[in-house]
Image 1 (cartoon, rainbow, N blue to C red):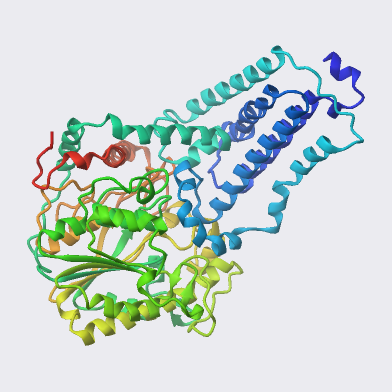
Image 2 (cartoon, one colour; image 1 turned 180 degrees about the horizontal axis):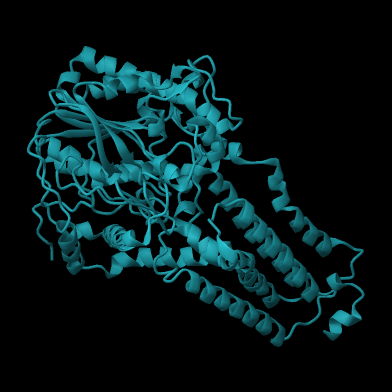
Length: 633
């Protein structure tokens, strides 16, 4: 204190500058958490926690600068401050599209960054410059000759006291958080809870610890772990429905991956025009079954999570993408299973083969061929979308590649034209934009129409080539296209308020299963992407009793209609569990107390299922499992 009194200006002393930096970072982080993230803050305690949670971590991280000598101390402070600011800024930009926070595994997905440039630019705002203004204040203090900065000697007591104060603040923060949300850290499926209660920087520490735990899980796993998994999955397995089992036996399989396609588009009209007229017609096709309560269950892996689930009936990871971090694991994926039944397998995708690590993990899945952008003519820029070849030339060029495969084949076609930020040459657009004033929402309908036309084009080819009559065609939406950050615009589109229940229903994506000779129609069964593999295998007449699947056959009379989401939420015909609250899906109101016990039991089941799936993936447990269901020692 004596030093501060002697100095004419607080900023002439390092401690004074340190206090200034802490206050600026605290204020900036609080304002960002309050305005940029939808954390569902309720009540005085949560408001207070949101206010104080950046303080302890700001003090703790910035206190590292005390370890440096004299003027290097201020330089270190500025560098640490800048890094923390960039972390805050990066999460804000990431959240604008993904409604989620960056994790260490997502940072490791560097091979995807080259294709993301245009998408990231559309997320930036002029006001983002405000994130960095205070950094220039610190730089000015550091280099200004008008300020007589006195670095001075700092003993052990001052930094020790600062660090101790930071630790005490963090402990108090955690205790208050645990009082409001018991088992916060042990049940951390939802990252927004961690940020809401502990703050952005403490969340980063938490994420680092969880990532380390997951990476070390494989080394400690052994064959006894797979026995536990087998017992668990057997407890909810569903027998195939005799009416549908083998309906597509020996047929080819074609998956059409409908990028960013949400179910609200089906039968939706914009200015009197159907947005997806061909998909609408398939809903009424006599041999096509359309599921109108089918949900995406993806997390940070987005498209790759969807693929991971449909190929393996395993959930994606809570942090990052299993495609990236678990690319060398052992899997019992659809291509590998069907190889024993004489199937050739291939993926068609007009983008870089390394995107999402596909060129590595597809080998682990057992695919025979991967036709990536090197198999296509991508020279004409007019045919290129931001993430690869536009859908119409993609399907057209894929025809000759498909014809090289021996039948029966198991194939997947990954489309990209209907991808954020939904840009399309207006010469290719055959429907107008919406007029909400939100560019992402307004553009969404033009690329959806284009994708619909491309699908019709491909169906025409299948019919003309003779493949249509001997092929099961499965079309699925991979994830949402419009995140909940655009709910105000979506309210104009759907004509109602986006309540928690409505927002959950917006996570529905289309699922079409076309099988020649099978009775079609609209199926109201609740299900998700985790259920696709057992459904498709049973239609092909393939038994799954020896496989480890976390989904169940959508057509089985024993199918579980509880649809887990990666953050621990779930939906079902009678109960929606969303962000710590339970709702009646018909009324949209919170459940009365008489039903809470049942809801709690369902939530516990969901969390158990996610936990065991993570054990399989993180522990690479399928290396201990044989095709006949036995355990390898």
